[in-house]
Image (cartoon, rainbow, N blue to C red):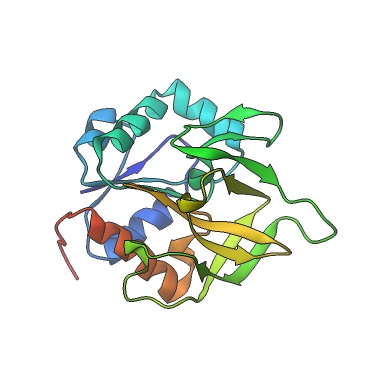
Length: 206
């Protein structure tokens, strides 16, 4: 079973449907016990970093998410959920994150369109089980802030948007995707499928 963590700010329906289309059981939940028992967990997110962290803390899901990461089972953050994995964000003032990955989330700065919205090509930087059987291709981004990992080995893939932009991160069992894999056509779904395969969760249907 795959737990989709519900703290009130996620694209829960589209993510759960994508997981189910890939053949896995998906449960949208705010129950720490259900999350702890899951084979894999997804932290989605849409909205502002500070509001999301407030919601996570108020529901104790920040601690549940950290405990899940510490368990060694696969965890992935999607879009804002990826940003929440980092130490802090400068969105609407300094806000502390989950600190599962060292680094900061900063706003795009420059004479170009913000938010970064649309299809951009991924650049794979190193081997990862997420990339098994895949070639670099385009995925769908919507974001005004981007993560700057402190540790180079945490950066698995980038995209180019007037600079090198963090697209996929990973350390041990903790992963993150800045884009929306469930909205990114075949490549996005295959990336999500490779993550789900890491969970060892039984495929219930095809």
